[in-house]
Image 1: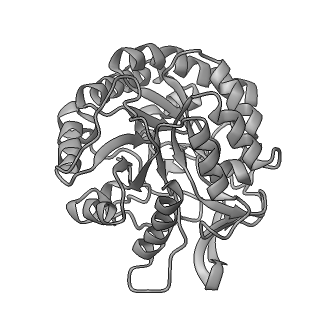
Image 2: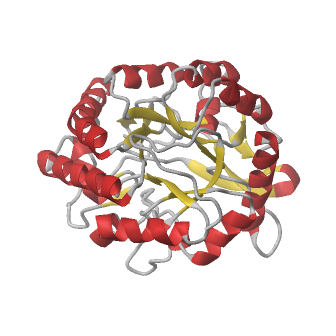
Length: 366
């Protein structure tokens, strides 16, 4: 299998920066694994939730609706069993790659953890079992975004070089979330009229603490790192709901909630660069020094929220090569993926955009 990297407990990260590709569930097939390998990747970060699933379309292509919803939560629970996860890892390893992380829980599994609802205790137990299953399957990292509203307010357009389609933000996004929704997905189609009650920042931080207090001991025992993503877009409020890590300093507050070695960061350089405070290269320097980065999302952007646009990886306000140098100097030992890339004007827009980003990163890492 061509030199698969060795695993190790509580993070399983080998002692070198590694290039990876993030794939949604409908991409978790041999064709996409081989595409990653051909682009020079060694690792896969897998999403088990397709955020555009709907009764009419289970392929992951459902457009955002008028209420800002991205489709239905609650895919098959089969995807989260130790057996299924082990099978996924083995299929990836059969192509000479490594499964570095699973990214994002299904909102159906933890909506009341985020909302402090009546099923919170039950869902925390379900999340604990998912973490145990990752450990049994030999998957070292679980990425998550503790957010009620999730990713909201993005727009698409010809914002990147040469008119390539990319995403960005063009003003605040204040459409309230209707009942039965969390993370832009519907978990209860029969929730009735009305909107989700707004929370406060203090309430959301307490909910995060409850989550970490419950999950981190289990994660340590299972040998799994919990990796927290910053808010995207990083606004104080989105859809009338508070955000947690919408400024760089808030990441430290999250780390300080629990000293566990399993409490780490899913370090999204693009989201951090969109924030209104902090110089991005100083932010990378600060957090690389903590040795608590589980894995890295690395893309480029121009401008700040609420009016930013994503660019090609070599063409924004982030000096990506400088970021790589900082990570190397601090002996960062994890995976780097281009979380997004502009879609290029050709018959395979996503593939071409990702191949360009991966090639640039691979050259920079060398």
